[in-house]
Length: 155
Image (tube, rainbow, N blue to C red):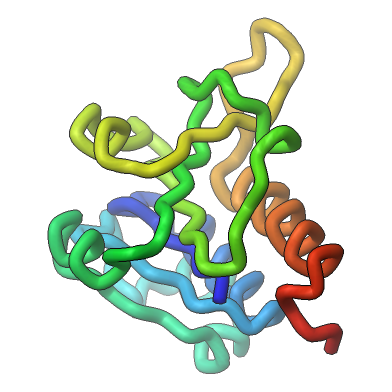
């Protein structure tokens, strides 16, 4: 099943918002440590509300541990540095949508290791979307494709 992975997230409310989305769609969210906040952070708890207890959360202690845990699956990095538009990419039900840090994205090592890189097309001169919003757009597209192909059951 589709998963979301957050590479060393550094803004607690954004991570909690993504976890809330994952809880609503029944998706697992992986946090690749270190995170820039503690899970008990009040902003994290406030943004996640009572959904955090319903979210499937996996904490990978490092990039290497994440790669081992997801071996055999595609990591699809959502990045402003990609040339392939999100809409032109065909997601597989076993993909992991990888989101970078809000402040700096991901290092070149990660860019070079992922199986695919996609971007959300935006107006020229715009830098980026909020990570939680971008994650929701990519997740919605991946779930839409899976639904059309019959890869997921309708709730």
